Image (cartoon, rainbow, N blue to C red; front, side, top):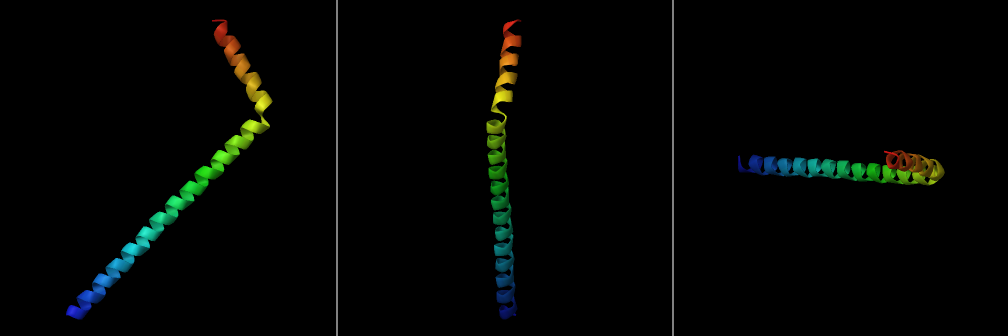
Length: 66
């Protein structure tokens, strides 16, 4: 009986380690996704800088006329 409880405890520890690995993988994937989105946002701002500046100027102009 003692031998079975030892095996069971080892099995639980193994499952815990697997679950922690899955959580770690999910966190890593989330970090990569956020990083990619940030890079895309920066590239979009650089690519459309002129249009963004025109839009910003129009917004400021509209607010100043109030």
